[in-house]
Image 1: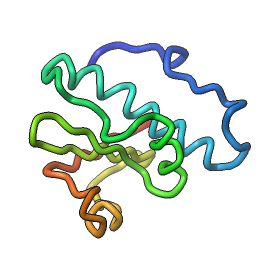
Image 2 (image 1 turned 90 degrees about the horizontal axis):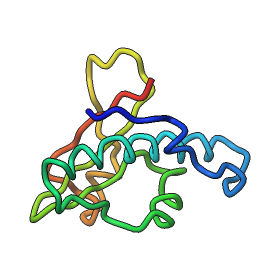
Image 3 (image 1 turned 30 degrees about the horizontal axis):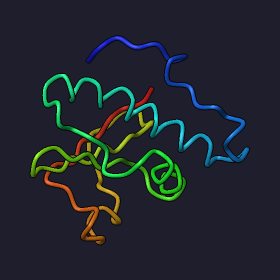
Image 4 (image 1 turned 120 degrees about the horizontal axis):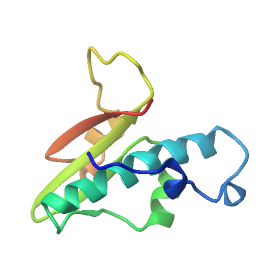
Length: 110
């Protein structure tokens, strides 16, 4: 992974509701803004499935971001769990055909 500064990916918190939604959005944004530049350095066509505003509407309800590159799809699923002996894909990622991915990647946010 590349080095990054947390301040470079901070969200304008004033734009978010003062609830746990803000934290969920922040964790998902942190995951996306950390992994996407690394993935693009390896596979330049990698892009989030939706625009940032759409993702911020989804993140309070479902953790994760779907990335497209070529004909492959990768779901990044952040977790704050310190120990990850197992990984569970949120059911929405499996039930909604438009959200199904070829690969599911847990990302530890600590």
